[in-house]
Every structure is written in C-alpha cells, then in structure tokens.
Image (tube, chains in turn purple, blue):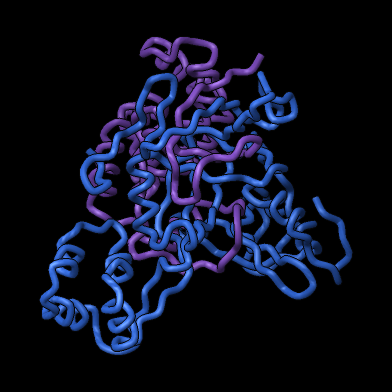
Length: 164
Length: 261
C-alpha cells in the first residue's frame, strides 16, 4: 500500500487544496541543503503560457541573473560542502567549474538517487559514503558529473574522452 | 520521436513530451554540429502548431548556449540519449490569487509552495531536490516610461503618508512589488505619472519536494493510477491558520504581519 501523509493545511492565495486534485509541492528546504526560494533579480522576460509547462532550468538561469546576496552566500556554502566530494570522485586537484555549482549539485542529487541513497538504506553518513563509492565506480554517473568539473584548469569531461 | 510531415508542426502534447530530454545531434542543422549535446528548452506557438527551441552548449565556451528552432523535420537529426532526466517546470501564478510576486514569496516563506497540476500530468520525471519549479507572474517586470527609479522614489518620499512610509521601509525580495503595494489612489496616480507598466516574467524558483494527490473523502488509499504516475497521497484537514502541518510537524509558523518568525 502506498504511503499517505496526514496533513493539516491552511488557506493559500488560491484557496484550499481540492480533494481529488494533483499538486506539485516545494515544502520545506529539501534535505536541509536547498533554499526555500531563489530569487531571479531582475525578473526574466518570458513568453506567457498559462498553467504548467516543462522547461529547461539551466537554459533559463543562463538567460537570467541570480545575483542576490543570499544566493551568493548560499553558493559559497554549497561550494564548500561539495568540493571534498569532487576531490573524492575525480582527483585531488579537481574543482567545480565557476557558475556550474547548481548543475553539479543537481547531477549529484540525480546520481545519489540512481544509486539508491536513502531508499535502500537509512540515509545516514555511512550509507552516503557507500553510495559515493558506487558513484565513483559508475561510468554513467561520472560522465554526467564531468562536464561541470575541471582538473588542473582543463575540463574533466574532455580529459575522460582523451583517456578513453 | 515525431515523424510528421514537414508542413505540420508539433502539437502542444508532442512538444511537451519532447522537452527536458537530452539529445545527441546526428547531422548538421543550423548552428548545431554532429556530436553536440543539448535539450529542447522552450516552445514557440505559431498558427500551424508549435516550433521547438533546441539549445546546446558551445564547444568553445561551455558556459554559453547556441540555440535554434526546430520543426519535426530537424527532429530527425537528433537522437535521444537520456529519458530519465528530471524535468524543470514553469508555473504561471495567477494575478487573481497573488496580486504581486511578493505576495507569493511571502506565502512560500510561511507555507512552502504548492500548485495544482493537470490531472494527466506524469510526475515520475519530477525528482525531489533536483527538479526546479520556476515561477512566472504577469507583473514580474516593471517598465518606467517616464523618469527614473530614483525620481520615483524621491517623489514617494515627498508624500507625507504613514502608509506610504511603511511600504517604503518594508524589505522586498521582488523590488517592483513595492510600487504595486502602495495605497490606492496614490498607486494609480504614480503609475500614470511615471508611465509605469508591468509585464510577464520569471521572478524566481523553488525546488520540488513532492508531487501529491489529495485523497477524496471516500478514498482510503492512493489510486493505483496516481501511484504509478509518481504521486504521494495526502489526507488533508483544513485549518484557518496559514500553516502546513505534516503529521504534527509545522512547516513554518507566520510571525507578526505575516512575516516569517
């Protein structure tokens, strides 16, 4: 039987959620690492579309600027947290490419997910370490992470192609 | 992959299905070269259907994109290489519910974000912590037709009204919302005097935490069809307080004046 969340919910700008309705949610800072809301300042002109559309977020962020102080501080903290993992996965001299923190973090979340982190285990520190080891052995995961990493000033993806 | 004739473009459903996936370029078209890797990033409505915008990172500078519009014919130059890619969404937040983008930001800080999806939406590609939900609003972008922002602020500081002073002193994450929250009739006068107009735009994003289905009173478990499409069931009880409480855990309680405590 599927999991059911019991919830008390107050009114939003659009009222209460409707019984039988499907919703997308962003409630709480996911995993304690991600911000509740990230501002795009100034707002980015985009063609109007009603309702919900699938888009490419990286492309949108490339067009816009996310330069609020909180975002800069958040990215600095995130770089500090992710750098040891990059070194572990690639090499001692590996670094995340400037402006690729968001993409690297996203690919890492996907890789952790694909290798069963917090699904087939308790999601603790030991399980995390084991999952990182599995990612390190996975050609597919490293191929996805590599375009956002540089080793000694060169893109890790290009170095991997040459090595192959 | 669509194999429709060259005269016809994509339907909205076809276009949305092709978006957010990763493709290899097989044959040269527009600025794209074989071995380029990219995604369909946007769609454009035309009288005969939808054209797609394909973007790939430039080889000389990976921080920049090159893009071109594609019809079903150019689609044959692409080979899909990744279907399990998490998708990002753009949601237009109605002006009738949130008068300004700042209204929605305040609500997110208190209750988190939640928005209804079409009932046929497949949520399997929405991945917790990886999928981003971009937020659009009809009044996200402010254009001043006459004068400057400094002139506008100086004019408002000259108005001796405690309500205006309060709006000017309040912190805003979305600065243009400040002028929409001025008391009436001053707001209309200011918009007219400085020829201010507002346009649709994207003002921020949130990270998706779940796709949920709110159970009906007579449903004791999540319908199998919803579970297959990646939804989690929610049994909700309505409360008057502006809060979301999951199994006793309060997501966040509002402080004074709706600000986050």
